[in-house]
Image 1 (cartoon, rainbow, N blue to C red):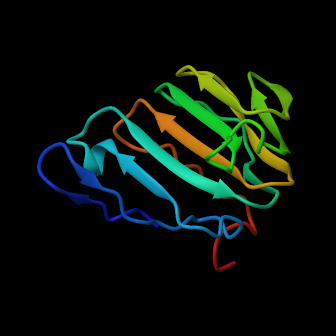
Image 2 (tube, rainbow, N blue to C red):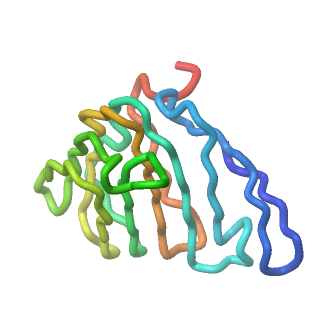
Length: 148
């Protein structure tokens, strides 16, 4: 569900919890979105804690904006050593197996996907940053939507 953040003046946004469309993401998320929160600034950020394997994105796709995806360990005191899992990530038609903290830069027009959390031995933090006023949201795969 989209966050109902609260503006405290022009440049201060109080972040409110939001909840994932994915039933596998159980903990509250946060986000800030250009179109809703940042006076249409070309920037959006979403943050989630991933605690179990699942398919987040099934199909390769492109965007007309740059995207930065972060996958790091879920312990904020050591996001490096606490990374313990495996992600499969498609980039330009090649599936990469990632077993380390990473930032993936996806330039606009670049084919990317799927995103598959293969192993989640410890919680992982996932951040999606886009240089666009609207967030990057894909339809969830069948069976992964909350309430299904």
